[in-house]
Image 1: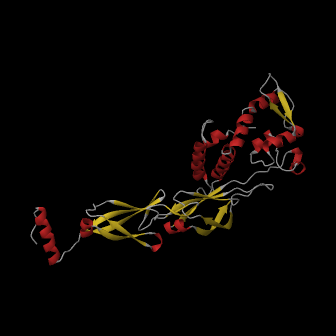
Image 2 (image 1 turned 135 degrees about the vertical axis):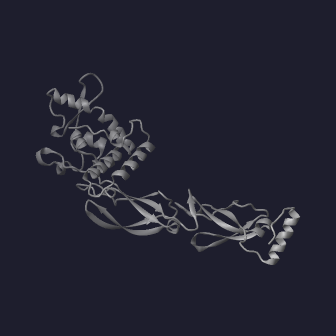
Amino acid sequence: MEFKDYYATLGVAKSATDKELKQAYRKLARKHHPDVNPGDKSAEARFKEINEAYEVLGDAEKRRKYDELGANWRAYEQAERAGGSNPFEQGRWTVHTGGQPGGFHTMSEEEMQEIFGTENPFSDFFNTFFGGVAGDTGARRGRGGRAARTRKGGDLEQEIPLTLEEADQGVTRRLAIKHDGHARTVDVRVPAGVGDGSRVRVSGEGERGTNGAASGDLYLRVRLQPHAVFERRGRDLYTRVSLPVPLAVLGGEIEVPALGGRTLRLKVPPTTQNGQIFRLRGQGMSMVGKPGERSDLYATVDIQVPREVSTEERAHYEALAKLAGTKHSAA
């Protein structure tokens, strides 16, 4: 039986941080997701391996147990090759104590349940290694005394496109979830304020667990659609507004668009320069988990040079040019 190296499955070192584990998992999950590789059984199998590995390494307590017991696997293998009794038979498990040579401790089923709990999210390696400790003792024994497999359902990930207005206000969507040739619908609520690339967790809507185990979770990956007026950068919104030349020179008020069809009044000072940016505090996007609070809106001014001028307007511009001592072409 092969030892499952979950670190190798995710392509990370044993010293990897939680952040590095999560980054590796997300990258591999996107690459091998069944929705991205329809009909590819090898990709589906790889996706399940990736989820199983992260299920263990992504949980601090499970990772600690895996690191401690996984390292002793060779000791078990050597004991079996030497002709010793099978350490997995009759509901008892022999664990190397790390003390004197040949020092082993035989653990009872109750001790194993105390360490690992009653839920077993692991593969055949763990089911065999630990005797399939999961669920009720009498119910889990199958053919030939082997434990019935109990595994928590894997997580699913799906992209959800949103307009900027939907992301700002929050939205409820009915989604069609396809997995293993089956389709179902689920109503999900996306909270107000989510950004591009955000992941929204829908508990219990992933793969179904086996033998009564809990289902996995559904993760919605937000993709914001381009907007004609606004650009979101981080939490804030950015837009551009036109500023007539007289107001740029003399100062005054202009209208700035805001989400929801609103308009705001912005006071610009005299001699405002082209490309100058003004901050409208609290007029940007809704913020996740902070009802009533908004990020900021930034308005960049584009000085609007007229394409045509009247005779009277030209006379005024010529007078300004004369005052500034600049030369201009004749009409």
